[in-house]
Length: 262
Image 1 (cartoon, rainbow, N blue to C red):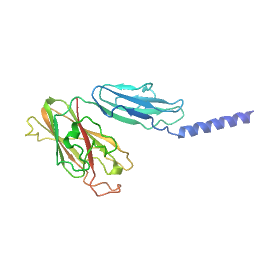
Image 2: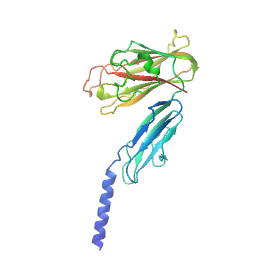
Image 3: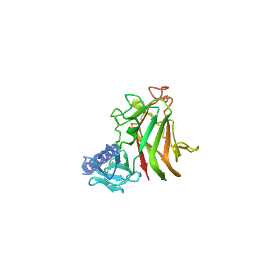
Image 4: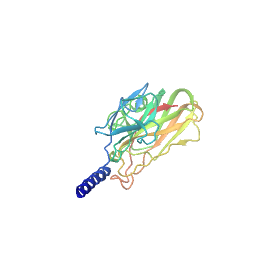
C-alpha cells in the first residue's frame, strides 16, 4: 500500500514538473481594422486549452493573473497599448503579445517627402503617410514607403497651428528583410513653413538585436509650443550590424503614417 502511494505521488510530481517545464503558446489576437481607428475598434482573443485563461492590460504594463480577464471582445475607444498573455496553472505563461492602438485625433493636410521614394516601394508617396491606413507586416502591401538612402525629409502641414500635440511616425522593422530601425529620427517645428526651430528633438531609438522578430515601431515627438508645420528627418541605418547576413550594406527604412495624438 505504502509503495503504491509512493509511486502515485512520484508520478504526480513528475507530471507537475513536466507541465511546469512547458510554456504556453501565444494566444490568437485579432484587431478589427488594424492599429489605427477613428471612433473605436474591437479586439478579439482566443486560446483553446481547457483551464487556460487570457489576461490583458491597456496601459502598457505586463499582464498577470490579477490583470483583467478576457471573457468577450474588447471595445477600445481611445489610444492604448494592449498587452495580452495566456495563463494556466502548472505551466509557464505565454509570451506577451503587444499591440499599440491609436485613435486618430486628426490628419495632416499634406505630407511631402524629399527625396521622392522610388518604385517598387513608393506607394502613393506623401499621401501614403496620411491616408489612415495601417501597413501590414507585408512590406509589399502598398501601404509602406521604403528608402535605403537618406536623409529623408518629411514635411507635414497640420492645417492650423496646434500646441502640445504628439506627432507619431509609424514604421516597420523586419531584420530578415533588411528593414531596420533608422540611425536617427529628429523633428523641428515652424509657424510659417519657412523658418523652422534651430533646436531639434530626437526620438529614442530601440536597437534591433539578432533574432528579433518583425514589429511595428513608433517614433514620437511632442510639440512644445504653437506650430502648424513639422519637419521630421529620418536617417536610414548606414551599415547593417556585424551579425546580419548583409553586414556593411545600408539598411532599409519603411514608414506608413503620421499620427496626431493629444
